[in-house]
Length: 206
Image 1 (cartoon, rainbow, N blue to C red):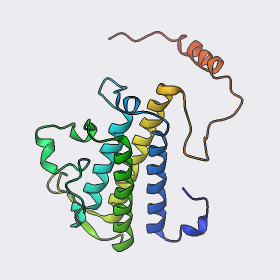
Image 2 (spheres, rainbow, N blue to C red; image 1 turned 60 degrees about the vertical axis):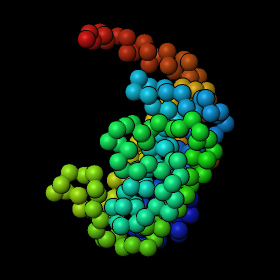
Image 3 (cartoon, one colour; image 1 turned 180 degrees about the horizontal axis):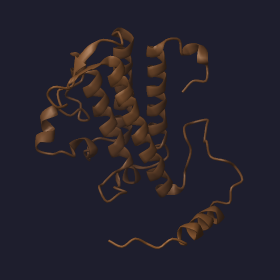
Image 4 (cartoon, one colour; image 1 turned 135 degrees about the horizontal axis):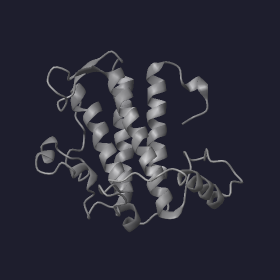
């Protein structure tokens, strides 16, 4: 995210800037890793670094595309998932196909970012869309609400990626150029101190 506050003139520019920052933070967590490391599931529910990117890409396409009557220009791309695919595989957008290289998925997500930014540049924030997968009776939402909704989702998943990447090779940081992690901390000693505090409390059973 830029530090030039002059560029944040108006609510739409603010939203575009912070959405871009979330994408940058997420994609940064992939840098320097090979296909195996990016695809390996690292939680009991199968979350992987590359799976997060596939999920976020399709989230943005859905919310900034069909919700406002906008068509994604490359529906045949293997990273783009048709809505009906979830009827047979609810985890489809977390499962990166073996024949979809990580670099291609990253390039795809960068195009998705431009597609989302165009919606915010072309439409007024009070434009009303309809989210097909939301419950009937509450599917209508403004572009402003959708942008905030998507932003919260992206930052949540960027946080997931932070944790996953640290598990892979110890790499940490908020985004390129800003680690947000203090220097000079003896991390093993710090972890040991936190562990000692936690162990003063009884473990819960069950």
